[in-house]
Length: 238
Image 1 (tube, rainbow, N blue to C red):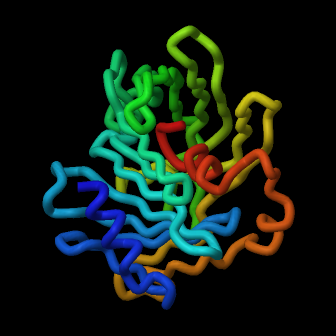
Image 2: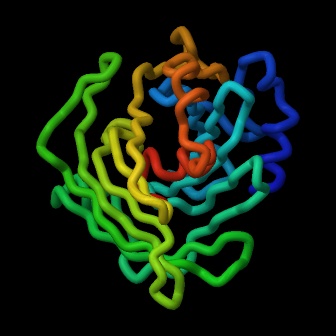
C-alpha cells in the first residue's frame, strides 16, 4: 500500500504547485510552517478509520511521507530521498492522543524498525502546558515533550525536547520550537505552523513552502537532513 501511495504521489502534478493525493484519498488540510515546509494532510478510504497521511514538501519537492493513526502514533514514515521506510512495531506503552487530552499527559514506549532492521526503542512523553495559542485563527493547545531513541544494546541514538501544538479539531500534532540531538549536541529547530488552509481557502493543496525558505536553505546545519528535520517536528515521533 505505501509503495503504491508513494508512486502515485511522485507521479502526480506536484511540480505545478498543486497537491493531488492518490486515488481513493482526499486532502483536508494544508499547513504552511516555519522552516520552509508545507504539509498536505489527507485521508484514504482504504485505511483504518482515523488514520491520516502527511506529505511534506520543501522547495525541491516532496521529501517526507508519514501515516499516523487515530491516537497520533507514527504507523509508518518514508524518507523519500533516502528511500527508507520506518514502521511502528511492539508498543509497551502506546502513545495516546486521547489520554493526553483527558489527563494532560501521555507517556509512551514503543519500537520502530527501519527497512526491516533490528528495532530501536523510543521512550518519552507529551504533556499539556495549560497554554493556548491562536495561529491563523485556529486555537491550539501547547504541549511540552521529550523523547529518546536507543538501540537494543542501550546506545543512545537521538533525543529531542521542546514544545509542540495540538489540535483537538483535527486530532493532529504540529511542530514548535525544540532542540534535537543526533549525537553531536543539541540543535535548535522551529517548524511551527503559520498558516492553515482548508478546502476552498487560499493556499489549499499548495506544494510550495513560503516561510523562512531563504534563511533555512542557507543556515540549516549540514548534519541535519531535511527528512530528519521533518521527523523531529510535529507529533509523537522521532
